[in-house]
Amino acid sequence: MKTLTAAAAVLFTATLSATALAEVPMDKYNKSCAICHAAGTAGAPKTHDVEAWKPHLAKGEETLMKSVHNGLNAMPPKGMCFDCSDEDYKALIEFMSTPAK
Ligand code: HEC
Image (cartoon, rainbow, N blue to C red):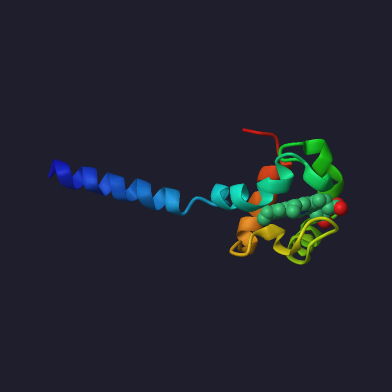
């Protein structure tokens, strides 16, 4: 019965991590947002630079989501992430606008 218990434990852990909320899609960050936001290219608010993000966050989530979908000045539509969902964008924005963990 020992193996069965171990298998059940593994299954349980796997289910837990799969349902974790707002997982930051780092692969999507690295191949899109990071191109500009990692170094602050073309005036992009830098990742983890809380001060730089403040005036953007102040616009409210709805406006930020619109900016990402439609593009804003030097930022191209969708931030160059064409397979990002709204959930992905929200997680990415939170990741970029908060201090490094
Ligand atoms: C080609 C460069 C580039 C890429 C790629 C890019 N951004 Fe941006 N982003 C910018 C620039 C430049 C600004 C500042 C625009 C301004 O305020 O003039 C910006 C601003 C933003 C803002 C603030 C919008 C606002 O209304 O103030 C958000 C949110 C954002 N980016 C999210 C993202 C996300 C999420 C991704 C990846 C999916 C991404 N960006 C990819 C260049 C980029």
